[in-house]
Length: 71
Image 1 (cartoon, rainbow, N blue to C red):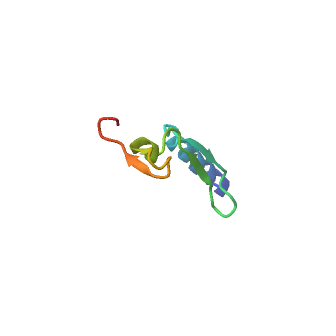
Image 2: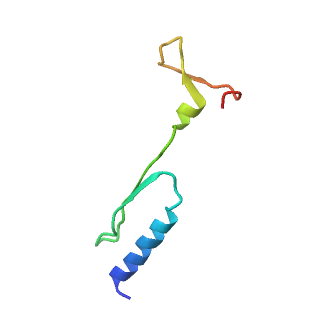
């Protein structure tokens, strides 16, 4: 099989593996140097937004950890 045929098989397999990923995934084709660029954009809150809230005392310059009851 030619190099381009092998590259196509690899690209298809990687797309298949990323199919169930909730993040938005963008992929480029494998370049002549054998490189493939993959970028992921997370969907949802960041870890800080999940476990911390902005401090009311300092107008949001600091963070306060949320109690386990709120998570």
